[in-house]
Length: 392
Ligand SMILES: [Zn+2]
Image (cartoon, rainbow, N blue to C red; front, side):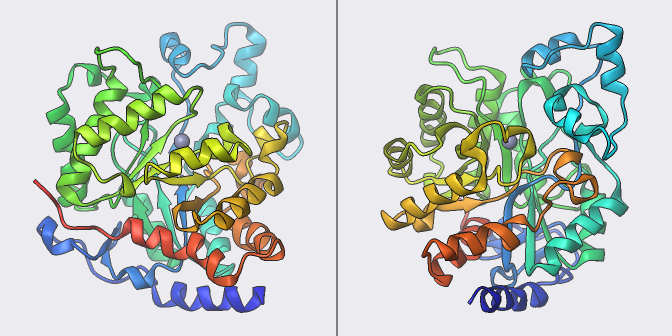
């Protein structure tokens, strides 16, 4: 049964080879009903198995001459010679276990930049029946349109690129002084004209950080980014994907309220990393689902959280099964959030094919049907990535 599923998905992946159309200046409304990839618009039916939250290229480092950025990122700034040596250590299979425990203090672990390695990683996904990867590397953390386009051309996997801004620690100089309108215009330009004159367009807004969200009237830089994302979603018909770690319900509620104030459609909003914070708290997850958003369990195979038993794939998958059984199967996504070398197969990680080869078979074994698994891995990502009619 499993083999059949993968074959079915593979057919879609093969036909959706991502080599459709060269990027041209199409008016936003002409894109309604299409999916925008780094190689131009494609037919939604061609996406196949889709990973909605990954980073093929990423620079998750922080500069040593800006300790305040480390504070914003809640990372320990390297002070002692030993700290500095750890920061500069190169990854090998020999120090992998040690670096997993110190991941945020090792520079090499936090860089995904080698196109040869990442092509091999993407090809492994394709070999397992994969069709599309959403690279949610937003502005300031190493987004690279040209390299993404090249990976897509060489692998035959569709790549959808993100836009918007991540956490304040990675905001470009002067970002906090910009207006919501200026931020909105930049996102809209990424989606309709392309990034930095490349003609390569984003197809989703995010990942947009909702970490620095406060209850008071004064809006933080991240909150302005959320507002701009909501406005740009309405103006372009693109979906939004949110980075959050929901320490309390207030931040998420406020985030969704800002989207509503901007008249964004909450059914086109994805709440990322939900597995990291909510574990098996089904009533809490259902309360969020009832606002109409999609919940993304996107930390499958992430080694540096394995000390947290909720992040073994089985409890997360069991939570998904429980939500499907309660009728929320259309509002669930799964991904790996690969953002460090330690998650890649070249460095002993589980890679981009872990969901297809380990988690999907587990879900089927737990009693989900082919159609229910396909809904999560193919249909829901396709619906979200398909651009809807823009609204003024
Ligand atoms: Zn994230």
